[in-house]
Image: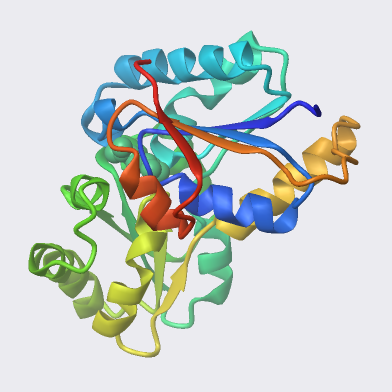
Length: 259
Ligand code: DGL
């Protein structure tokens, strides 16, 4: 069986990336790790995030993965340099999509909703400096959002109250782009669309990550040519049901694993 692509996240959010990857690469097998028992990563120190990223990487390598997608902005911005320099498989990371937002904004004001761990990372700061010259980037920590998404409370009153408190200050500053800088947040798009004025564009990086995955697999001659039905396995160290719900596949293979 062709080797799978490994994908990990602090929890269920990286399945938003998984969806884009399987859409673009329908012949690929995948293994997804949801480290929900340790979510949220965004509140942890850089050393803790690095330690968890190493643990997830080594498990995916033990499971025979040919490439790893770090489907978590917080883990990417804090650990990808280390991972790339210590393991021989190719890594794909995800960062808040500042560049497309900077190119798109008319008001020159862009909001970024992300975790504390992402917003405080040097990688995020360097990217903002590089691509958002002359743009006012308004950073907002999404404290509490990951926990509610992990608990399946996407449409809850609690969620709307929390989001309202995060969005209003950015809207008051006239943003016309909102960058979703956490892979959990694309699951909030229906709620956000109801809350944001029409002129505010929501920007996330899922499709770009899938495109990059395809390009890198091609570059390393790792693309699968298999014809049969692809195999997708999910491991979580918490709740197995929420993943099935989020990806909309009630019969998905989701197993509990104590990692
Ligand atoms: N999905 C992770 C990210 O993209 C969530 C981080 C967290 O667990 O706080 O940043």
